[in-house]
Image (cartoon, rainbow, N blue to C red):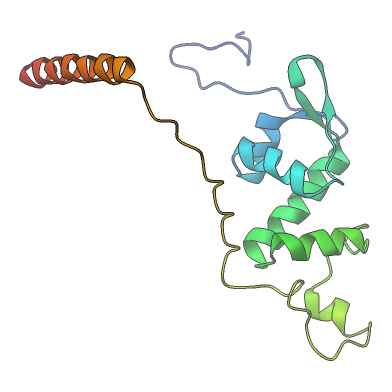
Length: 165
């Protein structure tokens, strides 16, 4: 009998099934939610409620409740069309605690809101990317310019050699 975790030439690889209460790594959570790992790390900066345990070397371990919260955040952002600010507000107000996720309209009407709040309502347009900070450029001295010029000539010669092969 072969080991299900062993990589074998013809056998498909399988992962051991974890219990529902087991902690998950960032790669497991990213695969489960179908989002890149860097997105999960970004969400940690935007949503202070997302706090995975961090072990040596900065390795993240997500509790089942962390994964559930991430699942709700992903659904609101990707399926419901909420903005990050809208989800932040829902989290601040405690609207995402508990089992079911309320639809925006269901939340607004009991509160007596006549109009949907622009920050909270789903939007079709994504939030604009923040402007990059301008960098100060230093002028290069003559020696550095000459060295860089020589390097550029050498690199172009190498590129030409590689193009021939």
